[in-house]
Image (cartoon, rainbow, N blue to C red; front, side, top):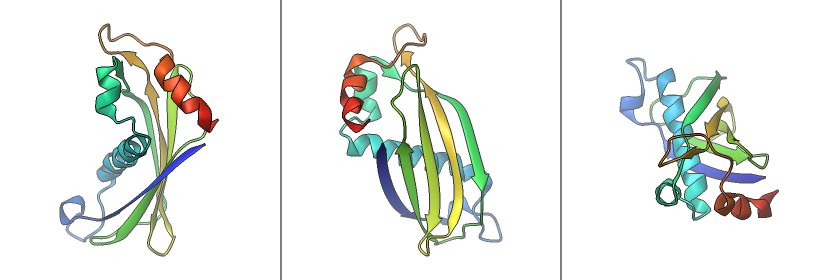
Length: 134
């Protein structure tokens, strides 16, 4: 299993007039967690795209457990719990500084050949790299 934790403060523009985080913001936080996980692995999206791989979102799920507020300090934990084949699933959990769960969810990404824009299986460079974690 792979895991990354990223902490951040809720910004004013992410909230409504009551200071509560807008539900449309959570997918972008998932993206932040996903990006940080791949950067920590030294496999940033830009490098994968240079190698001809794209990872479009095929499915997104968010479960809201408790509201987050302006200036809350949050931590998103991003996990890959199984070896990918023709798609990759990332799981997310967002908690506040007291450990209270704010939201959870997942995204499923297809592997796409950047030139043909056609689905492909996990490329060897990524499969070989991820194998050490599973």
